[in-house]
Amino acid sequence: GDGSMVPAGRVRGMDACLEKGRYWQAAHDIHRMTTTGPFIGDGQFAVLFDMEITIKATGMRIAGQEVAVYRVVDGKIVSENFMMQAMS
Image 1 (cartoon, rainbow, N blue to C red):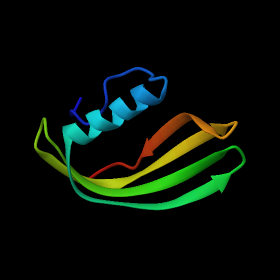
Image 2: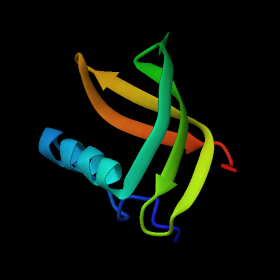
Image 3: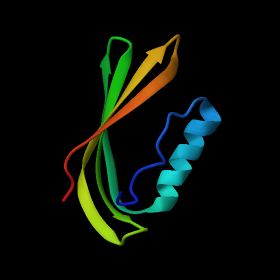
């Protein structure tokens, strides 16, 4: 891979989710990051991320958008799904 992804596998629990976020931040230089939303749906919400980043492992600088969809049960986020636009 290009070094931009968190190691494969699911994470469970708040601590694991926070660690995943720390890993992603440590693996990238963030030049620009804006969010739009949230967009509220039935039992879920989405956030649009617009970003320009450099992948530290490769030095590749990329820009693009990503949609994050969060599923909510009993007031807690129980899953997240990220869909990335082809980055350039």
